Every structure is written in C-alpha cells, then in structure tokens.
Length: 281
Image (cartoon, rainbow, N blue to C red; front, side, top):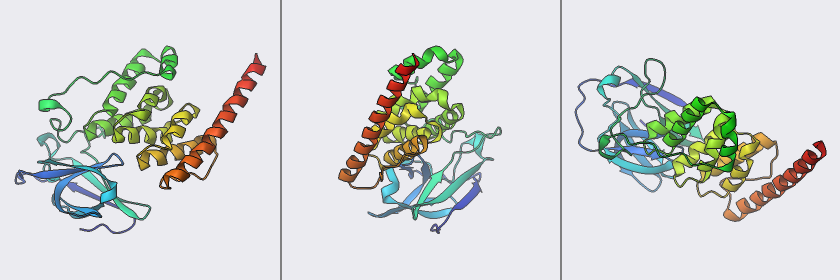
C-alpha cells in the first residue's frame, strides 16, 4: 500500500498466532517517531517497509534517522497488548509523506510499551535513569517548585534522554501536560548530543515555551538537525511575535545571517528590560 496525499489514519488489531519472523526492522524517524515492519527495498530516495497485515508504505530517506534490525514485524504484540489497537498515521508534511507510529493504548487511555525488554536497556533489564543535568535557571527555580513535582519532572527528563522510543514519547507527553514548570529542567537538554532528544525538547518548547527559552532557541537556529532548527524558529516567532526571515532549510550562510538578526534584536530587548527594571527600584 503506497500512501496517497493528504492525511490518512489506519487502525488495526494485531492477530494471535502470527508466525515468528527471525529478522525484521524498526525505522526510526528524525521527528522522533518510529515504525516496526520488514524493509522490502531501499534506495537513496525512500525505504519501503511492510507493516504486518497492513501492507507496504514508503518512507522518504531524508526523514529516516536509522534502521534497526530486530524481530518486530509490526504484526506481533506482547501478550498483554494483543487486544489493544495500534494506530499508524501517514501524515503529509510540506508535500512529503511521513509515517508515524504509536504504541498500543492501555485501558486508561495512556500509551503502553510494545516490547519492554528491547533497545537501550542492556540485557533487557531496566537501568537507573541518568541524573538530570542542571543549569542556573533550574537551580533558581528549585525553591519555587513542589518537591514531588520536581522529582517527577527530573524522572521524565531522564526518560527523555533514553534510547527507547516508547519511553521518550511517554516522557514528552507527560512533560507537555506539566507545562511551564518543566521548562527550567528542559533547557539543559537543548544541546544534548542525541538528535531525537533535542527534537523532543524543542517540540516541547514550541508547545509550552516562554521567554526563558529564547536564548536556547536562538542558539539552536544553527543546530545540525533541521527539525530542531524549525521548532526553534517557530518557538521564537510564537513567543516574541517577531519575524526575521529565518528558514530552517536555507543555506548555512542565510541561516547565520537570520540568526544574527535574532541575536541583535534580543540583546537590545534585554538591555531595555534591564533599564526598565532599574527604574522600578
């Protein structure tokens, strides 16, 4: 099945008794999503992947972060999730077809984990989350936040750095629900070495960011990842209501020139705000 234009949503229930396949694939996308199946063909332009009983779809090569070999064909599910539905969406972005996937939903409506013993956890055992990174912004905010909420945010931020897509997706969704209190804890991840983590962070900035994320967003206009650059620019435009002609897919020279305009504008804004603050007291 080759995706058509527009937006298409497919839903299927995994069947019992599916034959076990020794080799399958997971295609991880640059936008943080993933899809399980069997890669049938690859070229410089696209990867064709067969998803269980659904059929075949094409994913543009430029949207793919990496392809991992495993046993998940998109047909099998863990026993506890065999009666759950899995949604596969084919979304059109700028005229290009992008495939995104969600793990099975649990009875309470949250998203469950498809295969809790694979990917990013040595020997299939859970490892302790890495301690959250800190920044001056975060330290200044710790006194104003409830200790239980702080612990929850730190745990979710640690999950946002994990290898496993289901864990990152769940963490991003919960951090979005928490909103602004999570921002000081997310700022240190703006320069995380993992592209998928940075993408999730700037997607959250776009959703819940305020003036506290302006500086990291201006820096990210030169990020190597186009998704990060795009979310950073959209966040700046939403928060400031300013536009300086920045385009995430422009040449490096044009991106640098537009970033310089943002920097000059923000430096002047900070000087004026500092002067206004002095007048108050």
